[in-house]
Length: 313
Image 1 (cartoon, rainbow, N blue to C red):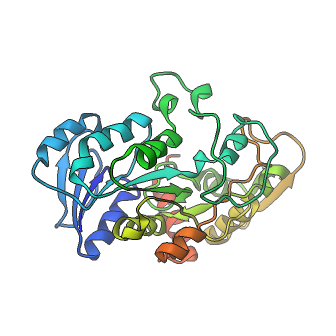
Image 2 (image 1 turned 180 degrees about the horizontal axis):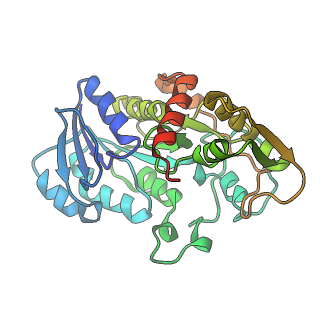
């Protein structure tokens, strides 16, 4: 297959590219050239900004692609532009979305009303009624002000003249994660013998995925024609509570401190831990044969080692 990837040199992308090349597909990556990333020799790179996709379109004027992959469509206009400029040169789009499209996420961060639920979320579960989830905490010149994956999904699934595939991703951890998802606990473990969790936060449960495994799910969706016109959740088939997550980090870091769960105080502001965010990945496992290629123990150890070396103090 001939595949064009928009973005894809930071976190997830290098793994996806490597997996596609190992499967002997031809890969072209369009990116800004701002990331120090080693790509396979066979990969064709085009340097540019997605704000100027017209320039990219001109550079590939006489080429066609089996699949165009959008690694980071954050706002509706991102999807509109990709569809406008590439629908006539591809057979299918693959776009990355997020579990934050679900109504449960809106209740988790306090922008949607309704009863909290601990149910696992499938691709058919309700999405948020409130769009632009971060407008209450961002200004108009902040990218988060216009961010909404629901609008991105609607463009690809309803407006694109060619079939699309959408992948709803979980909280992703692993080397090169610039959000350093483990560091809030690792920093404390390095300097203290005690971690405090509020009792409601300790019970909070969410889905996660190791970066290389999530990349494999993306790769399967790219290469399998059965993924056309489908939405897939991607996540591990287990979901830790926050207490279990901290205990796991403790075990692999070999920290001998205490984790204290307390009822006093209040949970984090703007966060309702009574609302869980667990997504079911049964569909992609059944239809595309997805399974983790890196064992959990190995992935968490890789992540801890990388964050200890790279997380800011």
